Image 1 (cartoon, rainbow, N blue to C red):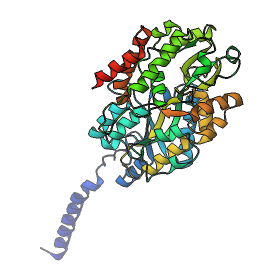
Image 2: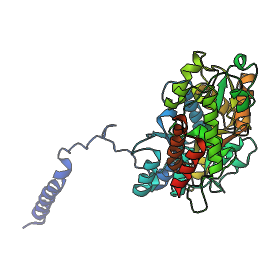
Image 3: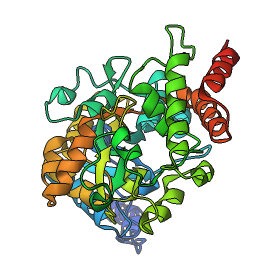
Image 4: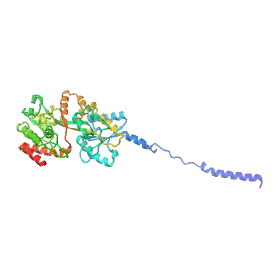
Length: 421
């Protein structure tokens, strides 16, 4: 084969081989998928980003009465206050509404959440004084000692500061209160009643719920001269002499005609108020929150057995249950933000509760009302715990009814004490 022919053959083979290797490159390519906005997977946050977001979210549990999303003046004030805190501190506040009573109430929800999902515990929770005590004793709350000194601030009523403590440790920041008082008409009494003696000698009718299941009036009378209800072992203690004096008060009020027999059937101040509204009674023992909106008369404290002012008070507090130590200072800041005296003044006025701080009461517009409420709050003491009330109230209520039915105070008191032995 000539050299020229061999060169020609090699050229043809190289050309064919080249065409074979280019086929995949010259074929029509399959179009690449186009990612749309809907199909684009969202970027996944890093663990650090997730932790940062979580650490800036505060969980707040509230009962329905304090729901910030209902359309009332007090709810609107709270909603705005929470929004202001979010803006000022760069956090998000997650509000959960929990039942106030029943199996899923605030304290039971705390207990269940604490066992099932501790990380979901609320950083801040609104509790009654009694519920706060219950939750604290059962280890569901964190003491605030070491986190804040807010309870050391002088701008607290003494009863409110006491409510914030459980067994000498701070556990709550009081933000709303209620107290017992006597509503009366000055024209009827020709002035301000100075004690039970002036009321009983006035000849004007006094009404109160003698069948109150909590026996608050009788307990207030008892505690005014003997504040020991529980011994060192936690057992109930009643003094026969003091109990006799309490029952004698009811007997005297009944026998003088100042207290009408019908009060034996009244279980709440709502049942006795119509007699005051109609003018049939000149004075009524009430919880102030039930009359503040109407202001149907003037107010003085409930008096003790020695005529010294002695009112029982109750209230709501902010407490801390979250286990995240990073968020605890923020929760404390939020609680402090929500008990600022200027804000508390507006919110309590709108909600119908009493302030827990004197400076907040000063912000109410009615100077005369301020003076009356201040006198009551200055002479108020926290109600006994629910555990004590559960045992003592039925005993006290039964004893009062026996006196209304005609039994002698000494005999009733003696039988009550014998029954406790």
